[in-house]
Each structure stands twice: as C-alpha cells, then as structure tokens.
Amino acid sequence: MTFLYTRTNTWSSAPQPTEETIKYWKHISQKKNWRIVQLPNGFLQTEYKSIESEDWIDVTRRETIVGAEQAIDASIEHYAKKLEFTKGPKVVKTFE
Image (tube, rainbow, N blue to C red):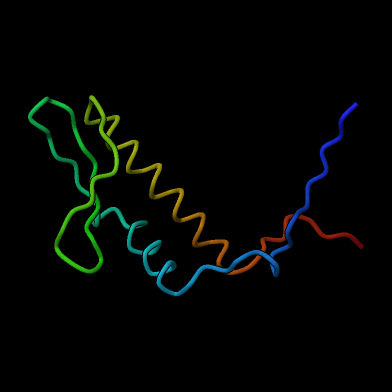
C-alpha cells in the first residue's frame, strides 16, 4: 500500500502577494475595467484594460454575450476573493 504525505503551509509561511500584485487584483476586480468585443468570426472576446497603458488584454472567448458577461463576473469574483485574503486568514470558528 502506498501513502501520500503532503506538507501544508500556514498563512505566515506562504508567499505573500506584492503591492504590485494587489494593485493588479484591485484593478481587475472592477467591472469598469472590462469590455466585450465581437471578433470577425462571430465570437465574443472579454478584455480588461492594462494598468500601464491604454491597451486591452484579451482573456476569454465565448459564443454568447451572456456567456461573456458570466466569464467577466466570475473573474471579478475570483480576484475579489484573492483581495479579501490579503487581509489575513479568515476566522471561521472559535472554541471556548
């Protein structure tokens, strides 16, 4: 029989995000920095505005506007959760 042993990291030992990374997460978690464009093949592409320039960075391609907007909302939710955890671990239960 084979056993797999893994090592876990605590919050203090895990690599912490840099200020630049946090700035990026804040930027990308705002819907005003996103747009949807239609490509010549009919697909819709989601893009977010670059922090450094006026360029748009493509992220996903979807067949419908609903799918494209859901992809943007999921990305925003993902980065918002990452930002929440920059404040430290979240206490979910305490004991007396």
